[in-house]
Amino acid sequence: MSNRPTAAALGLIACHICGLVSPRTATLLRGRCARCGSRVQVRTSRSTERTLAWLLAGMILYIPANLLPVMSIDGIQGRQEATIFSGVSSFWHAGAWGIAALIFIASVAVPTTKFIALGHMLWSVRRGALTGQRERTQLYRVVEFIGHWSMLDVAVVGLTSALLQFKALGTAEPRAGIACFCGVVVATMIAALSFDPRLIWDGEASNG
Image 1: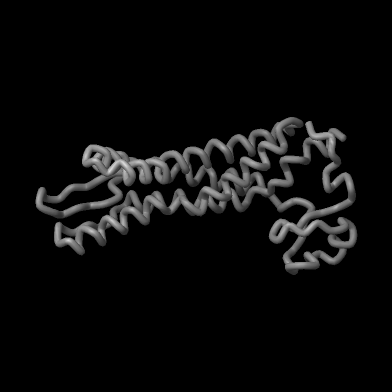
Image 2: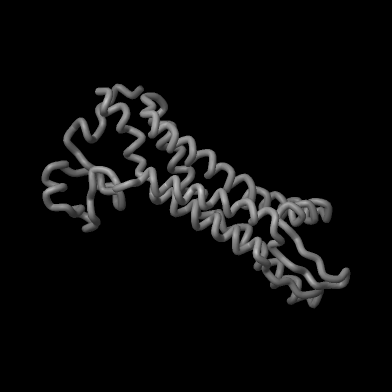
């Protein structure tokens, strides 16, 4: 547990958009951030419920995203449909280890990390954990950061399709799996944005 007082204990409140910290009472009376003009609330309304809903939606979509083909290739060897894992395996055995690693990180490691991290934060907030607030805050920032790289798999599919057609090696078309994966990316990004990280410190403030 941190020995330093929280902003709430000092009578301060932070803007969720620009991060400006200002006097709590005056800011709530004004209702808007003095710097960016955004609406300021003590805590985002129904933050954990919305985060959980979007997180579950992303986890549900992640199943067909892995089972359904993400790309259909019509080339010299005939028509082939590739899922995420078969694509990773094909690139790996073809010696394109960098592309295989990129697809694996973007399609498996990143979504799984976001599922576990957001689930852990929701669970810790729910039980009012009094330890590890700083680490969980840093974890939230990591989730926000890696969210910007979640579309790498979609970019690889688009790049592969363009490369095949440019070299006249065949044609490649996206399939339903890539749409489901896009849904996973969008759902997890909204889940992260819906979560109010100030809730992480509420357990300590209440205990104090």
